[in-house]
Length: 291
View 1 (cartoon, rainbow, N blue to C red):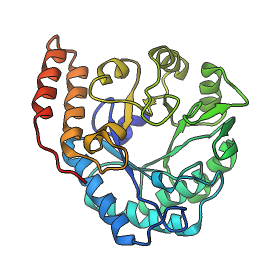
View 2: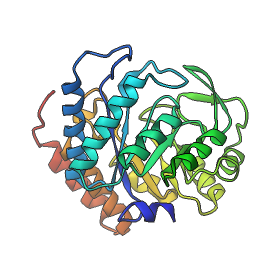
View 3: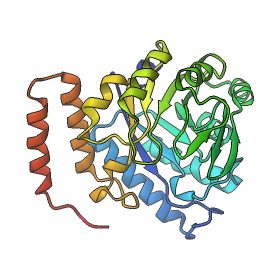
């Protein structure tokens, strides 16, 4: 199984580092040091909290281009990803938003990252960036040309988008796996911070037929025990931020709480709910730094 090749535990937790605005993006603030310092802080917090992998993405570059990003963004992301790989002993992945899988693959191949996330690998989606078409053909050819084995985690019916080609979840997943050759599937809710519905998760895991499926949004320490029952792993960020605010950095205490909730869920203990509630009560009285 692909996930067992990358991660040292079943049903891995992949924490996300949201990079501050990068050069040429609309909100670029002009400080490389601030970008790098924040990325190092978040990667360290995730690793210290016990996640099994890290995904780095240019989240704060919004509004995004629907095509290839500027070379400056590729350059800075390459530098940041390399720094993170040197700092933490965890598998690292890359997502170049909104859908620049080619740049993500190039960065991964050059710096030694193990996987990429591609929001639209197959099919056609109407998004706030306009119409985005999947291009699995050229991405898979490019991976072969680079001579690397970087895994492709592909979203199906990705958040912040509506399908124009295949609205049926089962058929969309089967196309992404069998025609797009995705190594793993990612299923999200409708927007950042929204979890996928249990019915959709059940349908998705059945449609995957053995290909791993990851939860791509909306997981937190309160719902992970229900969500992970129908998934092979989880990608998480929003609920790990200080005070739960998206613009703030990752909080290692919140990471630890999520990891513990996941452990209890996977243990299947009768006392899991009680233990998690006790943990939540304890952490709610912990003073967290602001900023």
